[in-house]
Length: 329
Image 1 (cartoon, helix red, strand yellow):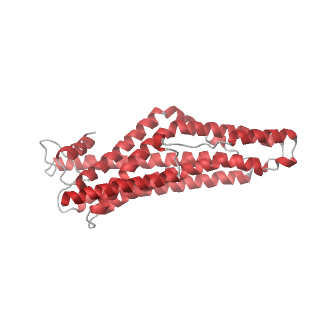
Image 2: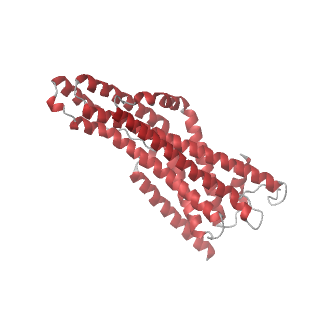
Image 3: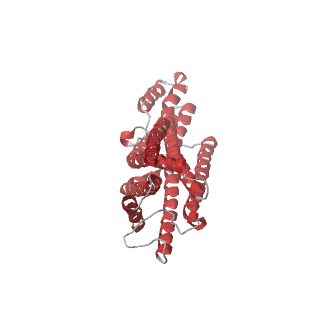
């Protein structure tokens, strides 16, 4: 809390250039986004626990082919989780190590407190340890939360994929009835995900829109020597990949939920009994509207939304660049 307070006070009382201001805004937006998402997850803790406990029971895997699909998805989640943590570890190390290579005493993030000189011992050492500890905790939490959300999206998409696969292979009323039961469970799982994760996505889209803008501006105006530029570049890469992963896997989730509708038409319903045909019609009606996750007023979480975020971030970045040029002139 004291670290964040010092960063905010610097924005009001001590910044000298627009570059300094945007640097602290990017740090503050990152911390605000993490706190906001943590608060939302804490609010929907019960719903998230239900999702975790029921996810394995919703996999329709009667044969080796379906079990191989489950194992393949688990392996993908593990690889993505490791990749995300590696990226965040390097970003965290760059953030806390760039002051060690500077010619003078600087902190990982600029801060200001009244009646305190941050470059004098022991205030410098205390602030450095506090900021470094906070950065490590933020990196760990961001990696854990992003890995969790992406895994839930992939496991939710897998449920619909398995149901669609089962419907295509169904040859009897009993097999189709089982698929319908699993489809109903997958739909309920999707509704619970929307309830728990839509507020998280709203916070994420809003913060990343501004974060990509200010980080991109810093890259444009910052000197290219030293480890600080690497820190800013890694931070920008994290912000872009973070929102891209969410939009891409939410889009994948929606696509797989609509695949059940397509699978009903692709099944051999025309060669089956009237009861089978009637049940297929029920599947078509239930799967007609795909499950889509959204980010509040920003719209549906999808790749078109990611494109819109990048366009708006570029527009804001161009505006900041113009303001910076006017200040120099």
